[in-house]
Image (tube, rainbow, N blue to C red; front, side, top):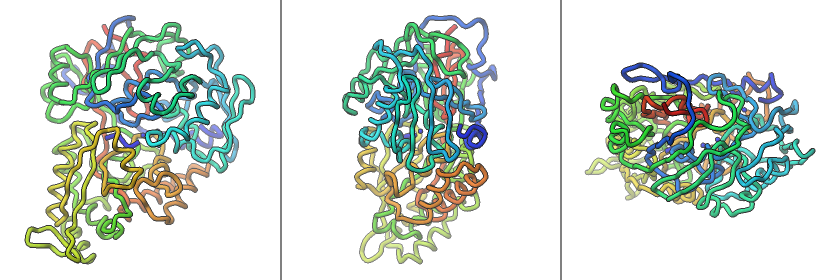
Length: 539
């Protein structure tokens, strides 16, 4: 899923290293070429039709956390900064330059002049302040944006094109956060709308495309913004986008998406699964892959549930899962089993592979020690109560159900009864916030390890209902230091605490795999493996 709520320089030399990330970008197909390389002369015009598997039910970039919807709404808004997917370096976008205080508490951005929103209003420091001041009021769907701005003391207008953001405590992650879609800048008129209005009606941005039509669970149409002239410094083309129109069609069935691409009804598709790879290889389609940084696909456990309060039960779940079998059976070719709570492409990732091996014998032993004895049906029980677990999931990736059905079998083999409960995408965040769940399947993409603090600190949303522990100390300390070596050490400590205590059960890394027609060129991933379509052209 990407689905839980997803999410760059600093005292420049000090914090650039914090976001240095290696990325995996490969392509396969009969030609062995990447659509991003393209051939011939780029040309303007045309419509790109993209089939995605799901719709988050919201078209506000600041509230959307599902990759398949981020692909489209990301094109509507610009961000203060951008992140180079090759180096992790933070580069100018709406902000032409910035300063960060030595203690990483104050961030001062100098904005480009002449930037306008599609309603004609101008980008000013006041607009940025309005955006950041409104984020804490987004509510259930704004978890990512709210987390990035947690601890803000003030946002101050220094002059019409200079804005200063001050935090109560050091916040080393914030510059990278300003490059994300979650902190994409919207017009003041949009900021004044309620979160619900922004979700249903959309927002006004300064981006290279403008929302023209949204039909929930059916389609989203964007049109080129005429006069656009303030793109990211990473983009190749200056000025307006090449494409006239983008159409995102919601096609839940993976096989239907693949068939539509083969027949030429659509130009690109999301979430290409293993079952469709062979059919798409060769011909006029290229498969384009990139590993997503951030928190891997796994089970977010509600640590306050009676059975799950016992670390031995959580650890038994962790050892009962055969990650390699899940990756090799369900997910696209090249998907890696999780070796930490963070994907290997995340800055400061630490391999904990020995702690994430499949060991059914150890899982059973842990459950025995916790007092859970197998019954006649093989399901364990204690004090007359069976050991059962309901896993909530949403249909925003074709692999979700198949992966969970396999995990269901693996857990049953050690005596844990699993029920699967499908939610609508819009139901997931409120369910997690309510605490009325046992476990939830998902992942969160972000090219900065501070995603651990956003997800696991008891001082923030604490969706997994963790108890206060030394993990809080490590997470707070990594956000407060500008010492890259020290931060790496603290992030490693946090990863170990999460895995060893099985607060979260990592399963597989998310690998974004797209199917792209060979007539589509320069369809580029950004640092978080979402899409940047300004430079994309059809020919």
